[in-house]
Image 1: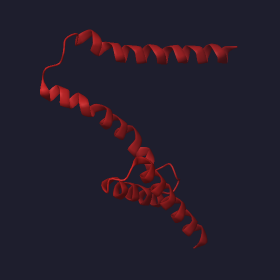
Image 2 (image 1 turned 60 degrees about the vertical axis):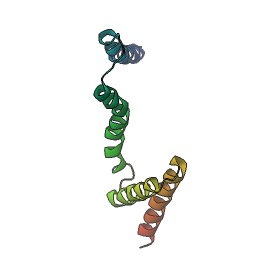
Image 3 (image 1 turned 180 degrees about the horizontal axis):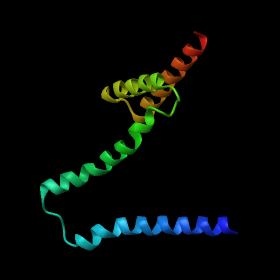
Image 4 (image 1 turned 90 degrees about the horizontal axis):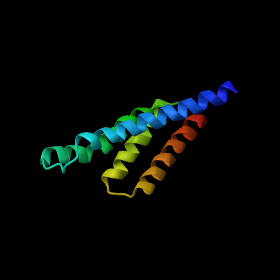
Length: 106
C-alpha cells in the first residue's frame, strides 16, 4: 500500500511542477512580446533544450563509445545532406549495427 501512495505522490508532484513551469510565463507575460531578440531567443529554446537533453546520452546508449561516435558522424553527414529524419535514423542505426558486428567478427 505504501508503494501505491508513493507513486501517486510522485505523479502529483510531477504534475504540479510541470503546471508551475508552464504557468509562470503566462502570469508574467500577459501581453504580446514585441522584441525581435526575445522572440528569436524563445524560438530556439526548444531545440537547445532537446539537444542538451539528448546529445550526451547518445554516446552511452550502445555501451561502446566508438560505435556511438560512428553513428553520430553518420547522422551528421545524413542530416547535412538534407536527408529526412527517418533516413538519417536508419543510416545511423545500420552503421552502428555494422560496426558492432564487425567488432564481433574481429
